[in-house]
Amino acid sequence: MFPYQRIFLNNGLEVIVHEDHSSKIAVFNLLYKVGSRFEQLGKTGLAHFFEHLMFGSSANVPVFDRELERVGGSCNAFTSPDITNYYMTLPAANIETAFWLESDRMLQLSLSEKTIETQRKVVMEEYKQRYLNQPYGDVWHHLRDLAYEKHSYRWPTIGQTLQDIEEYTKDDVLEFYETHYHPGNAILVVAGDVTLAQVENLAEKWFGPIPSRSLYKNGILAEPIQTAKKSKELQAKVPTDALYKAYKMPAKGKEGYLEADLISDILGSGKSSLLEQRLIKNGKIFASVGGYITGSVDPGLLVFSGKMESGISAKTAEAALDEVLAEFLQNEISERELQKIKHQGEAMKIYESIQLLNRAMNLAYYAHLGDPDLYWQEFEQKSKIEAPQIKAWASQILKDDQASVLYYQSIN
Image 1 (cartoon, rainbow, N blue to C red):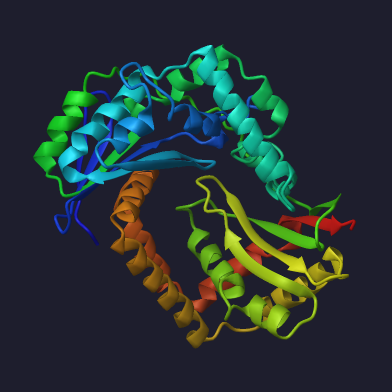
Image 2 (tube, helix red, strand yellow):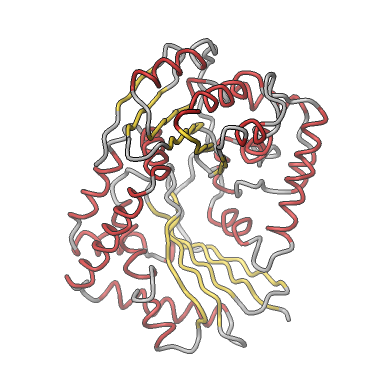
């Protein structure tokens, strides 16, 4: 556990301070509680589009990156279905520059027609290169659309279609900015060689005057309970067939979520996992295989995916996968196997905590879930889960009527 303190400004901005004086570096992490799940059909991809727009200019900052580089800093960002996260690393002595840059683009981002059109071209090119012109690049477009019928997890963060990105109007962009980019919808974490008093003063100075706005009224549609297996066959010029089998699972923080995480670890995480041992080391069907969860704030997916050996079909691979899953459901989980997975999780937690940026990001993310302490509470809860609990949840989750299967077939 690492120490932190929380401050709440009158305009709704939550500020978390994590002091670490072991080096002269500081991290400035600003999380906005907006991702692609807050979008509407026909206007998808706006959250990711804003990640690009935010690195343009604002009223007092001609070029964001250039001003940060002048004081020895670097920056980046990412968009997920649930959040958009912006972060900077810089010498702690220059931390006020981060406050200036980030507050300026929160309050008065430049959203001229020229800026919008420039970034539209960039994002459309990214869409084509990463999703349309890459082998298997459109997997999540198809898998999400197959798995979800109503919920806005139906599309990936880049957007559902190129047409959506092409048709954003300036009003669409302004509305999204005014709805989601304000103090009450953000969490700021400042970590490193800083003090609570220093951060509190700078937060009040640079963010305090920014007016609060009404919080977004949740219009996200609930996903109906899945009652039958869903599947889709997709043909494309890819090296080999690939299989993606996704099961519905509980939302992050809900009962069963941590058990689902452990199920994916035991079955599909790393070279010693059950799927790796059975289907790769002792099999001739899969060239690669793995399991993971989407980690979603709303009910998400436990996914098993793999590429086939040449000439093997995705449907043949599914039968082999199902056989291993059936054995997993029938057999006991050994204490040795469970402890190995828990030790791996503990090692990952320790590794995460070494990096100052990781600490800042985790504090912001779990604050967005309701409480920064959830970061440690979740780990402690997971370490106490025993095999019978995992098996009980596996029996609930790993059902074919909860599955959505994408058969990605090679036509080479």
